[in-house]
Structures are given as structure tokens and as C-alpha cells.
Image (spheres, one colour):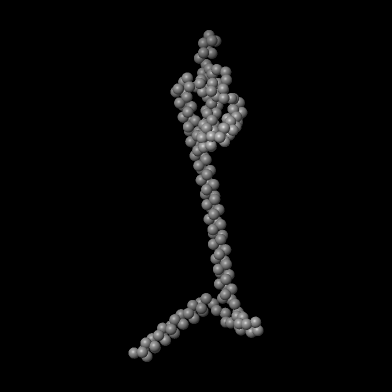
Length: 183
């Protein structure tokens, strides 16, 4: 009877085979490492790949033989392996989505930083223009030479506009008088 119950036990993995959940995590990390390694040049990638696999083995307390043995065990049941790989693909897609969100957030932060800098520079330029305009309008004296200083009337912007309008009217009047004399 005991032998029969042991045979019916749901977790009848041989020794050295990783449990299903741990195997999914290991394979997810292995596929991440393989994907990263495929983006590297072949000469420089050997040491990097070895280091990445070493850290995976250490993290999950296994080695390449344990992973191979586990993969052989789970591949005997293709339906279960298919479910495991569907989970692995979902994990990889979630990691990719998370990475994209991080990169998008970083890009947005850089864009915001750039926009703030542009606003700050525009504000400084405006203040500088206003400062120059105020300086030129508020000058009380014009220095003609080193010995004489002549006081000058302070003009407001409205007064300057009115003066310009009057000059235009005078110019139009002069032109009309000249035309009248010519006729």
C-alpha cells in the first residue's frame, strides 16, 4: 500500500531536478542572459555569459547539469513544458514592459528638465531685454563730451509712441503741402 501511495504522489521528481516554479524562474533568467549575450560581440561575450550563468547558478543553488537534468525531466511531459514556457514568455513580456516604462519615465524626466532649462533661459533673456529697455528709457543724462553733461527729459513709452505719431502726422502734412505747391 505504501508503495502505491508513493507512486501516486504528485511531486515525483528525481533528485537534482528543480521544482517547477524554480525552473520557470531559472529559465526566465537564462533566456534574459541569452538575449543580452546575443547583443554582444562574440569575443567579448564569452566571459560575460559565463559570469551571468554563474550568478544564475549561484542564485538558484544549481549548476548547468542540474538545469539540463531538469529540462530533460520536464520535456518528457510536453504539455507541462508548454505551460511552463507560456509562463516564461509572460514573465519576459512583463519585464520588457517594465523596462519600457522605466525608459519612458527617464526620457520624460529628461524632456521636462530640458523644458525647464529652456524656460529659465527664456526668462533670463526677457529680464535682460527688460533691463536694457528700462536702462535706455531711464537715462537722465547724455554725456556729449567729457566736460559737458546735458540733462535729458525722461520719456515714458506712451510719450515715445505719441511723439512718433505726431512726427508721422507732420510728415503727412508736409507731403500734402508739397504736392499742393507742385500742382
